[in-house]
Image 1 (tube, rainbow, N blue to C red):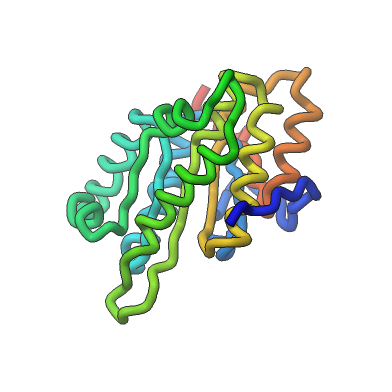
Image 2 (cartoon, rainbow, N blue to C red):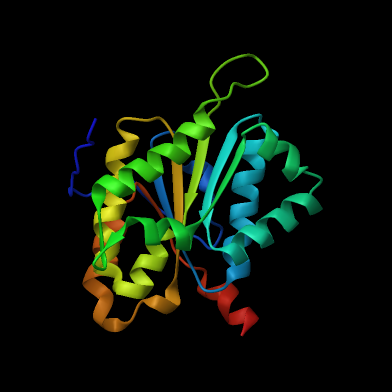
Length: 214
């Protein structure tokens, strides 16, 4: 079934502190984290994916190779056996650059290809059951939109964000994504606001943390 794309504003929550909390995002919710450093993103992503795995649920992580490698190292440091989670189908990892390349035709996202790819990844995670025999909850992190925005300007990420929203009307999952602030300039102000509006929960970059690190 082809999901219906809706460009109306979705935002219900905007963070008002430097402490982002992705656990606020409910099933079928769509959170976005803006960040200055990879460490800021990875701390939140590790907590998000780790809580899913510890809770007996599934995590789908579509990220760059560097972020996937760092995530697995951080999960292992917390005592999580990533290899077991992979074998059980509870950790589904995909290279965001390869996923993006599969979706692009002439520099634009082909919605049919994108839908097939994303539904395939979600379907792999939903195929299993938790210890009680119930379907696992699925927690998704996506970085394809950030790569798309960086390579083709933020406006190009909007349709893919709305496709994610449409898919959440068909499949039950929680979604968070992340954008580095470095890809946004002053001339991107309008598209930045539009990107925020495609998310139910917006977590602002922590300028205070960034200043302490620079």
